[in-house]
Amino acid sequence: MVEEAKLLGTWGNPLNGRIEIALKLKGIQYKYIEEDLSNKSALLLKYNPVHKKIPVFVHNGKSVAESLVILEYIDETWKDHPILPKHPYDRAMARFWAKFVDKKILQTLIKTRGAKDEELPKIIEEAGEQMKILENQLKGKEFFGGETIGYLDIVAFSVAYWSQVLIQVFGVEFLPEEKFPIVYKWIGRLLDIDVIKSWVPPREKHLAHIKGHIEDARAASK
Amino acid sequence: MVEEAKLLGTWGNPLNGRIEIALKLKGIQYKYIEEDLSNKSALLLKYNPVHKKIPVFVHNGKSVAESLVILEYIDETWKDHPILPKHPYDRAMARFWAKFVDKKILQTLIKTRGAKDEELPKIIEEAGEQMKILENQLKGKEFFGGETIGYLDIVAFSVAYWSQVLIQVFGVEFLPEEKFPIVYKWIGRLLDIDVIKSWVPPREKHLAHIKGHIEDARAASK
Figure (spheres, rainbow over the protein chains, first blue to last red):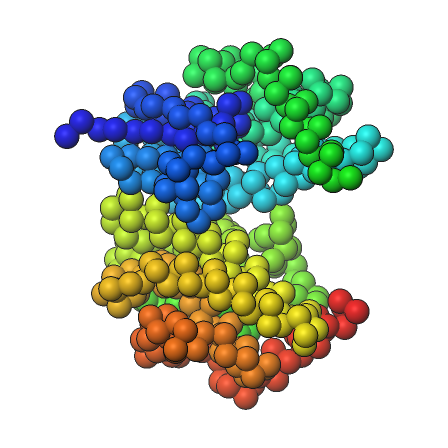
């Protein structure tokens, strides 16, 4: 049987970015399918009828949704270049902090989208406090995964990505070197990895894309 | 080295119930430590400084928090009587639906705590719609795990538990047999398993306990 892997995502979205990075690290061929969330495709409704959200990974006709669940599926299906650590305790820590990124840091950062200018500093401060907690986990390491990138690096990459967005769109430096020296160096290392470098969207196109999103969110919150 | 396993929880809480059930299924000896969340212990703050919540599992001095993360840790550490399915796709489905239970169904049910009487029917209806989606996953099976209980049964047990609470406290039948025939039978089967039967708190004591919680929540939402 010829293996068939498909990924439904939206352009520049760091959640499907997670899956693409994992697939590329493992050298798995896949077909990327761009979704239009304002006009959801029959494919998306078929493969993720519960949440109707991206990313959705389809492997030999069977679908998996939710980025953290997909990452584990990929790691268990293609065992070369493991992304989760080996030892159960290290695996538990990677999962715990991945949830912290999704449930805390990203939930805080996403509030910037519909926020008024005067609300931004408080949101940035809150996300910064959460980021400080995460930074502690990086102490003495090149990557969360140790000497190479792993599951938590791939997950926390979304935060690095948001920090770029905040600079580009609002001119706000979320993770300045003087306050987050360890995370700052980590982002530099991440962006230097070919698989990640090739995923990051071109700056100008990305800026226009994000600005559109922000305007929509602000209009919706009025 | 003598293995030492400790669990920090609160009485009658279905989230630490998940961990106790998994440990008992695997025959692992552990020490249960009751926490008072209105006066958090130094132990809790030491072992879960990030969220300061229960359950926390401490194994040979190292702690793991978040019930779903703990369940995976236990399953990877003690491999006998596996609770997660074997095949990567089945594992992904178990994880996907466990998240659905936690992020959707339990989040809806928890709203009953601070709700006014007139708000209850709408909350119960919403949770019922979500429960219908989950019920589909049980079709043709004894348990979510197949012929025996597994990870998703342990996780979804919280919903069965809530349905008992809703009957006892509000007299509301959340999962009546005529509307949820498959789930209804599943709850019956669950409550017939020794490990679960021995965990379920005695009815009268539990009722008084829950009523205290509800009064606190209602007072706080006024």
